[in-house]
Length: 137
Image 1 (tube, rainbow, N blue to C red):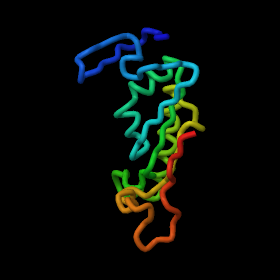
Image 2: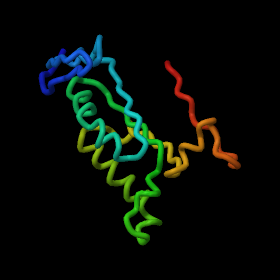
Image 3: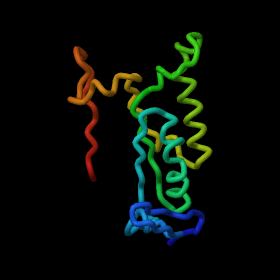
Image 4: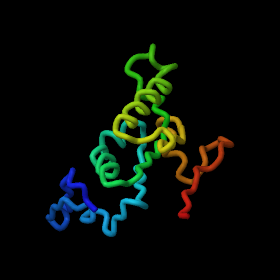
């Protein structure tokens, strides 16, 4: 049941509707979970913030999966040692303002610029665990 807070668009079919079923066919607000894959902590906010809000307003439960730790996101060298913790706190607060619970934010904490080296599941020359494989329940 749509709450009519949003207008949904299907650009391929050039359609718009107030019913979320346009983009999520068969939407069932009691059982829906949406996972947003985010390279960095702010990417899901910037790129899918509207979808996150729509999911919440339509009774869904959003999850944000953040792959990199944001360690390369400092503007001056004085921020280098604390940028990861600053970004973590700021992004958690921002997601909570949208209505996303902290336990629905999953952080894999791969270093910035290191994720592309994990295509085979391991860092070259490193004994870290392979990337997690997502299983369907």
